[in-house]
Length: 125
Image 1 (cartoon, one colour):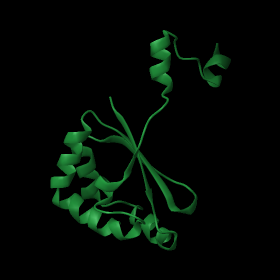
Image 2 (tube, rainbow, N blue to C red; image 1 turned 90 degrees about the horizontal axis):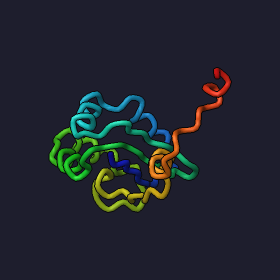
Image 3 (cartoon, rainbow, N blue to C red; image 1 turned 90 degrees about the vertical axis):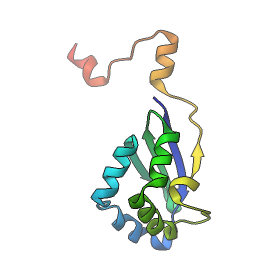
């Protein structure tokens, strides 16, 4: 299952408004994200308006096409676009993709190792 991460920059002067728009996100937009096939979707905010997103999806090309054709997503992205710096196009399609360089479970599987128990699990043994 592909894991996708991306980065955008929010205008620090508009950060409070951006956060308010996500508390909560429109219910119909949440439904469109889920219908696109994206799951485990998270946004993380860093210093200076740095926004990092993460989601899992079986087919990201299909998910992007679904959202690009969605009237709801088009309206949402049009409302979100003014919050971002240095953006040319819709935020959901113009974000900078990040390259995954490490994933614990993948490397454990490749090495034939089993996951190490968490601290709580090892105390219970």
